[in-house]
Amino acid sequence: MRLLLIEEDTRRCARIRERLASWRPQAELIVHKPISQGALAPEFLAQGFDAVLLADEWPGGRGLSWAQELAGRAGFAPLVLLCHGADRSAARAAAALGAYSVSGEDLERDTFTHVLSAAEHRQAHARALWRTSGAGRETQRFGGAFIRGYRCIRQLARGTTTDLYLGESERVGALVALKVARDRAEEPEPVDAFRRFLQEYEIVQRIASPAVVRLYDLGVSDEHAWLVMEYFPHGDLRRRIRTRLAPRAALHFAALIARALGTVHAAGVLHRDLKPGNLMLRADGSIALIDFGLSKDAALALDVTDNSTILGTPHYMSPEQGHAEPIDARSDLYSLGVILFEMLVGEKPYRADNPMAIVFKHRKAPIPQLPPEFADVQPLLERLLAKSPADRFASAEQAALALEGVLAGWLRRGAGR
Image (cartoon, rainbow, N blue to C red):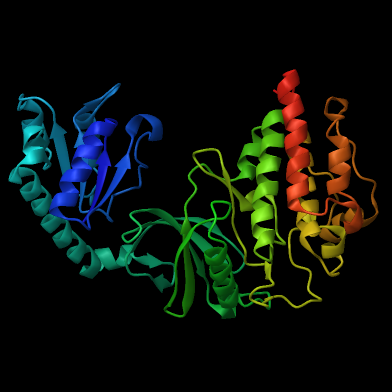
């Protein structure tokens, strides 16, 4: 049994957790705090839960109002309203919505477990219908791939070789992103997307750090490879840059990226496609690296690209990567320098009409100058964007310490707001 509890009262959360443990030791209880975490995503149907338990009230909110909205979502999991007092009006209102209800006294009685069992049976029946009905099977189709246990919500993006979808995972109990490779015959580039998925999954599972995206599943269906990953409703760093970051926030993000790169490099992995679109933002303000499809993994001794092939994004590639020369971790640090400049200035350091001209500028053009108010960042930027890897920071750890040092100075002076 897996339950979602929407409640702010930590004591009642603990009470329910204890009650479940004595009844169903293997039951899983996920707590969602409505004040700090906000409303549930509008696409979310809680299909991975046997029931959703709602507190009847919390500071500034009422469970019955939430129940009215959630009950209107077709296919939402069974609702159980947790009533505090003896007033049965809330229970009657919940029943009118098709929801269950229990009182505070019921938590210690068999009534509570009977209600949860009834909700579990109702959800099991709904899941069986969804999995086998024609309409249900259609919602489990992502382009040309039928992926059992995932509900397709909408397409998020279309790439050269893959499509990205927003879905809901029954197993994970959350919204997820699914990357689905199209038929190989459609690919204009000689790139093996299937091997890339396998490499990406192996890399991320081995690193197993909050610094990188969480990957949940991998498979092949209808001759389409697919990869299931964490969904980031707050979007990527590219979106934040468009809103013009405060300088202090830009330096903070750069330090977070350097720390994330340090974790990845320590695992023997070079990202090789670091750019704002591959840096995702979590609700707590942290950053996660995504898209390891172009990465080089020393531990796996695997590189899915030909050594003479230039792959990556020209605006963010180091001079050596842009010329298909051997690279190491300092190439990713160069990309970080490009991102830092873009966050502070609002535009990329090198621009041109075509990709090869941009690659040429990375090798030959002078390192750009930041505006005077960022004079204390300029020496740091010049080390990140040095043309020769030998002149850059030796490691992501060194870069992170330098960035954090400048940021600390700004904070002491009240600068960079």
